Image 1 (cartoon, rainbow, N blue to C red):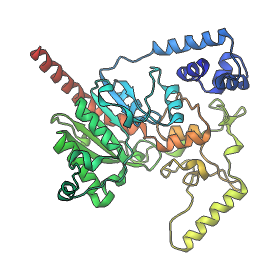
Image 2 (cartoon, rainbow, N blue to C red; image 1 turned 90 degrees about the vertical axis):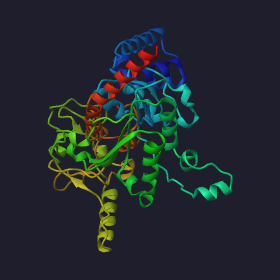
Image 3 (cartoon, helix red, strand yellow; image 1 turned 90 degrees about the horizontal axis):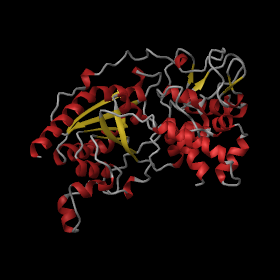
Image 4 (cartoon, rainbow, N blue to C red; image 1 turned 180 degrees about the vertical axis):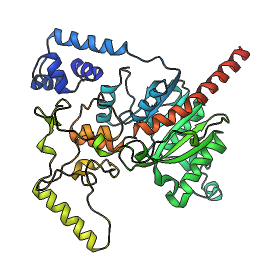
Length: 408
């Protein structure tokens, strides 16, 4: 990576924003980024100043946490709302890394595949945070494993899954708490056996006190999105999900996240344009795609299936935004009035639908942005969970510090 490309990533500037701030065309920026041309020293100096300014913005934090399978940093945003400070990040996808770098000013290198990182090389931390992918667990009888001279228990049942990496880091560092997220179906996967293994590993073998709750993000954003939230503490603390402040379901509707198209917001990139900041025509479905989706839905209705597209207007709560949204946008299509084909959400609207503020930078292509927001957590849900966790984290940190002081 060229020095320019590295500084651009650390500064968090998308190409369009960099072109405006540096006073050059986007073509120049792309060529500098690819190393086809060399920028002037003044350009590099300006970028170095921006990077230095971002470093000075680092939050202090009342406790530390690590961000595993970080994506674009949704869980990090949540923990920072509770005054946590991130000390380590792992995310393998290079496009997600670009977005993460653009939005968090610490400029630390983002580590790649967590499977290649030794637990002892990860900084000490108070909280482990992970939206881990859950692959199927293979559970075999101990007698069979003994006969095959293979390990059982802790190592065997989770070997080859990314959840194993969460466990080994918890085992090594013994942080005060953890916050894990996954799809709702984790609890019912393999007739409940997968989740039984997870619970046993965390509670019986690692000794953490586990609390779980399935929460629908529709209480916080206008989207039906059920996820299982797993909170664990090293000691028994009076934590309860019942203490969450959960707004009424549907108190926010799609009108709260859709572009108003009335000039009340400024145009942004290619998402919106003109004096009214109208949504760009590229997001409207072509006649061919719209005809295909209607025909597909009609075919499945005739078979008694519920497959089809989802149309929304300002009063709606949307279906779950998925990582496949870039393909046709069929799960959430916005009505545009009589005689007009519906449109996809813009990436900015997707960001809002996941609870990200408009200050959140989107430095990647639309395709990558749709994937990233579809894979993200709904930030306000986990910000509320983090708020609830905070006093118990701080108490466990104080207890640990006091015990270390006595030993010393």
